Length: 368
Image (cartoon, rainbow, N blue to C red):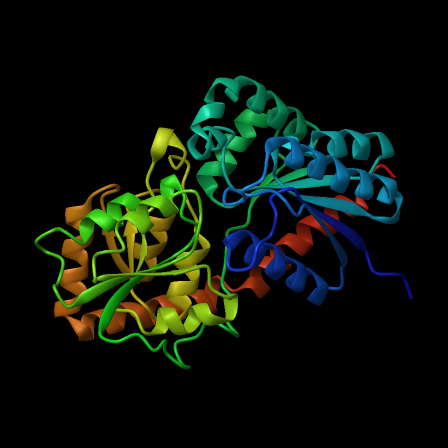
């Protein structure tokens, strides 16, 4: 009997409980193990947009993790990289050793400048670091079709596939306990970062159309937390901070709607977005209010799972909340549509099988 294929999973974005990055990593690893892979995670402990760590300490952490993997690289059949600007040293060493590397692409190089505006002058350097990695990759996996099209042009080859996000359909289900939050509420779950529309959803609370008896519940943390802290005096706002992954389904089930109001700051979302929060809310049978951006708007319309609003529009968000609040039967139907769609087309089991096929093909054709 042949041994299982061995995969090294490299994440230089530190996985943290309650953040989408950890959920994504954990679910992919679990699904690949179900497909027969022996997966080992190599991850940093100091990185991420919400980390309060000096740049020097982050660099040392990037080096430490890549060195640990480099020393054991020969034990693996392939390397799966959660795409990161600083992963070039490992990519170069793997190329020299003949170990195939697959990068998962969740955004463009310009995203760094959106998260850290002070780094925008370094954009050409970041683009070069990413392009160098992508050009020599065995395969690239993008989370949206628009991002895949960009990756083909950026990397200069066609070794690109689309595998989107998904939801854990054992945990995120319409049935189950609901959070003990009084009254009606709309929920946002995710990182408090610039492009998630944190300021816009806070402004929506003060729009005339926002129902007076509906609260805004925010679950998450990040560099935009100052905006939320400054608004906490409003009794209609409830900020729960970062919550355990297992607590999120109950928070979603009890909501009138879930917000996926991502914004296209500096063009970062023009290639489409596939937020984890979208699939998890849909899986719980909650109607979503999603911004008009490629892929996520298409999914919401295709599934009939919620309402689509213009990006960065507080008035449109408030109006959508009112519409759903005034039509509970229609809102419930939208929620059921979303849950059916995720079970049918967007579970992590399905995503894992798609990635398994790509990795198995890459490992079989590697130059080891």
